Image 1 (cartoon, rainbow, N blue to C red):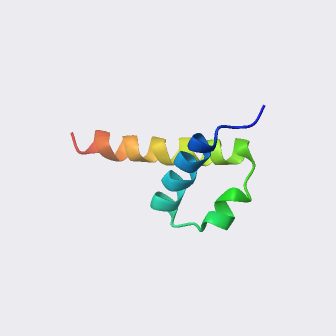
Image 2: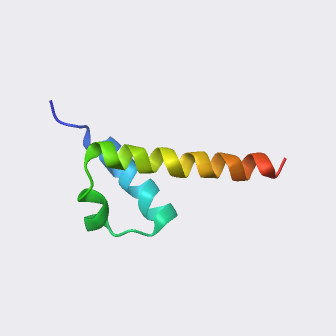
Length: 53
């Protein structure tokens, strides 16, 4: 079963937006690594939002 292309695009867009990595750098990551980076950036974003309240 292939990983859904829409999910890959969402992960790539999220990482590119926040970390300014190129598409080739992002796609070179394994699925597990991409998901880990998305999670890490999300946690940082949440901490920043929480600190503003």
